[in-house]
Image (cartoon, rainbow, N blue to C red; front, side, top):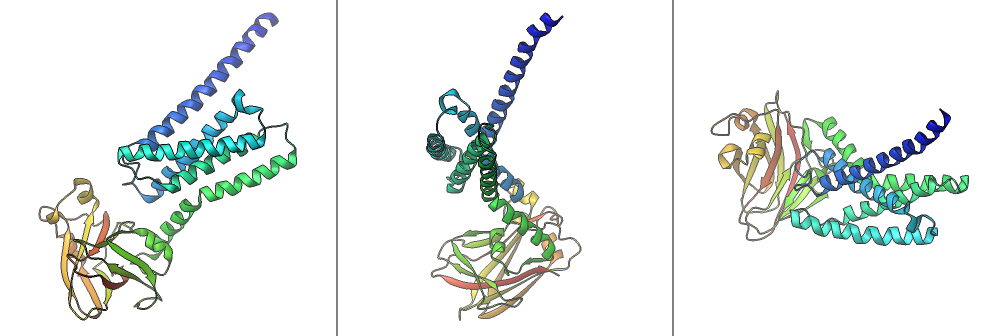
Length: 325
């Protein structure tokens, strides 16, 4: 019985070893697939997108661990390992970003930085799990790993905090009292900055320089979607211009976004901005009934756009206190 047991034992450990390797490389393959998937999650909630971006850290951490455990590198000096990991991460990270341009993704320096952070985390984990190292050095490596981990989570932490603030501030949609609020917006042919020269609520507003273009616009895209139970959308706009400025407000829901609906499937309002403060109030009922062939889903509002068109020269506006009432 003992003889049969001893023959079975190596086979069991061999199977276990290959199972771990298969699991490891399967995880790598899944990560690579999702990171290169067309679209990359850009249309998803920004917290999901934040988790998505953390995949760069996980992927390069696993690649680093796998490479450092090979016979080629396992017994090399720490200096050699750091040099190889740094160079390989920069080359591979830059190459993956270049490849992503072929699938309609943007080249991101931030992603390359996350690749490098992930690789260093893999190096530190490789060092920490090496029992031949002293307890003191392994403890130091653990502290350094926590530092790299906190740096890697920097953007996600800021986004998560602003997402909490977004819901806490509701029904205020934008007050511009913090720099983080600007990350809720998309900008096309404009220059926007947090400013305290003019405001109607709090100390700040958003100073927007609309540039000469067909449709320079700012759009609030990170927003609490449920507007049911409110009567009005209110916003304040200050114009420095002595001449009247044609301006347009656009609101739409998730159905419009997903179906790529046209002009008649959303809310559009043309207004004229006078010099000084313009206090605009729009009935929610008017927004809800604006699509021609349906009612807008007021529980799933996902975008407000504020734009002008065909400007001949730069135009500065101050936007403040966007809220539901």
